[in-house]
Length: 440
Ligand code: EPU
Image (tube, rainbow, N blue to C red):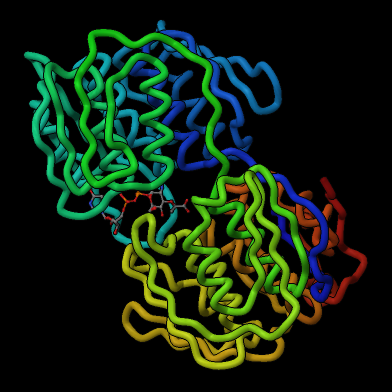
């Protein structure tokens, strides 16, 4: 069992580098299956979701070889149209990209239903609608999805009933080698959608309009391998921006695309935080009090749902009442109970958290209920007075590269420890002798 321990109160100061984006790296890894060649993917974040995606590619016959810590060669020429082990598929949400990639390559796919954070119902009806529009028959039961076409996929019009990142990327994957042209309307405009399209275009695909609401894909006969670098993770960058502001610090966050951070920056500036944009960095400084603001999460370029828990911590420290509305996932607010343990004043009314700021949060024993909720607990712990102990930290390891090491390098008093099976909880939470330090 591992936990994160934070002794709060240190303002974060210095420089931190942002890693490659989880939600771009995962689909690009699966897209390599559609490419059917050797690709080199650079700026890969070494996180659990990525390791699982690579293992899934290996499980269907791909070869994976790390060239450096963050670049990997993926050879998918030996991939077979077999189903990947369920226990691996169910570990990550992104495994649904196996369906689009296998369909493009073999005209058939059989995949267990994917896992991921418990933040809402997360249906995949729009993915299925897209595969069917391209001519696949899809069968779904409570645990498996099977899609196949006997005559080959054909381009078509696909209109999504809701903006879906996964659905848009899966439709692009399936359409990349289909006969004729596919037009996706109401497509997701997230930077990771653009990144996957750019990767496929480097491999010889013909995709235009990614990043707008209408994506056009003209099917090509074959793709060939390329070397491609994943974009920086705007959610990791946003998390560090919030940590700088919550602790009253000053962080130079480098290796980012400031344009991708605009919604986050705009709200922080509205709260009174200074955010200066450079070519590939942002400098975040907080000197004064935080003003309350109202925020609504929306698909890109709106305020990202994956920043909901982190910005909530900042709102907890503002002087006044803020409203944070969630429009993407119905179950995002499970973390508010944990923040209340730290002295936050939050009431959730339907899809809106009404947050009354307080001068100080205090350390407590809390859980990371999901990936981004865990990041919020870390920010709250850094800003709080006293000691915070975070359980279930495996969620964070799915999505953040060396979060503890990066925060320590800018002055946070944080560490990860392994806990013996039996320990004295009270003694431990008060800094007692049972800690076995496992710094990294
Ligand atoms: N939706 C449907 N039907 C579908 C697909 C989606 O109703 O067929 C709904 C969802 O239930 C949700 C909304 O549409 O209410 C948006 O879902 P979307 O498909 O965009 O999300 P996703 O592809 O499942 C990805 C990221 C999430 C991120 C969202 C939104 C991956 C693996 N996951 O999920 O990332 O929150 O897009 O940007 O790429 C995270 O990184 O912590 C995370 C949860």
